[in-house]
Length: 314
Image (cartoon, rainbow, N blue to C red; front, side, top):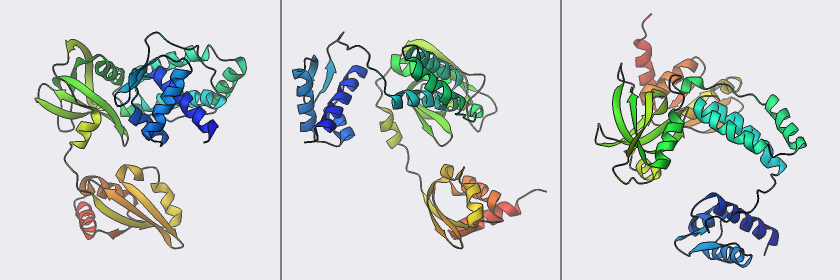
């Protein structure tokens, strides 16, 4: 048995017990790629060490209320990761949520040694992130944090929402289920009282949002349940070929269009995509590089590009 590996696993399990109300053995087994029986033995080892754990196999485990060890010292790698996380938060979340994160991180920094604080300061000065402000509505700086608070407290939300086909926002009362990031945008799924059904919304299209005192009217499944229930989307395999010196210009955006792999040869780069919206997204993106990129397949894509070109108004 690798004693060091087991010790680190048991220590990580303890920290998860501190961080969560209930931890399931099957989740821990999947995380560490061990059997549930191994996790049961690790839990037993923590109990024998005097850690008050309640629960049982097949249900979940938690620490007895009120039990906590003093805060542990951060490793150098963990400290630098916190500083990097702050920069990422600045780019990928709205201003209000970033403010809350920075406030929490400053409380952590106040307990660090001088050398650790200096390391963070050096990293912060030499790590820059481009702004994604256009991914959020500047007039609604607390959209994400309001959604998070709603989900945690199980309280409804009222919002003004403007979809891509409307010129003005509609007022809705919703019960948010979960939030997820996909492509370049944040989305959330919620039960909409206006539509009497579950709907998917995009955060940057929220025109106003307020947390309501009204509690949820129903029990909701987890976010993954509703994502799996979405109608299957037909995926088309697309292959294009571009000169090696030109391929680098496409690297920044290709992941948004289903990029899967590339094959580099002396005469160019062949890129393969699994595209969900060939006509309205990929074809239009392809036109930006059409003077250099050759469509290998499918033939339908070639025809759609020709149609778009014939409709250009100049």
